[in-house]
Image (cartoon, rainbow, N blue to C red; front, top):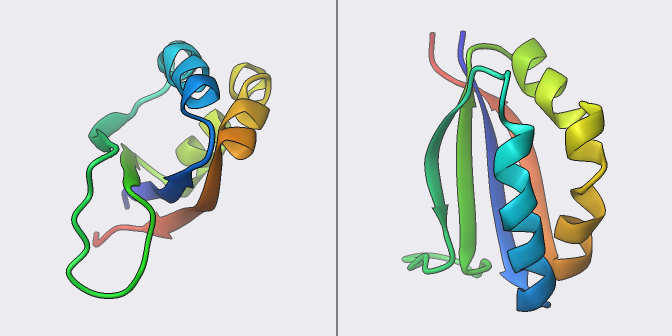
Length: 95
């Protein structure tokens, strides 16, 4: 069953986020992942949320966690955490 990492965030430091984005792509190498959404211009029709939305699809929860917990990703995660306010969720897709 596919699993998705979904991010929604308000950008608090664009320069630091740019550094994160430049480094994040390289962390995906060797992982089976599809980037469905990655932009800073979301339009929300209901509720309040940040402008940045990212949706990554992995073949399974284990695959998603393998990427998230990888040394390469963990080496840059602070750039995302220190440049945005929001959430990152791991959710199961429909099998």
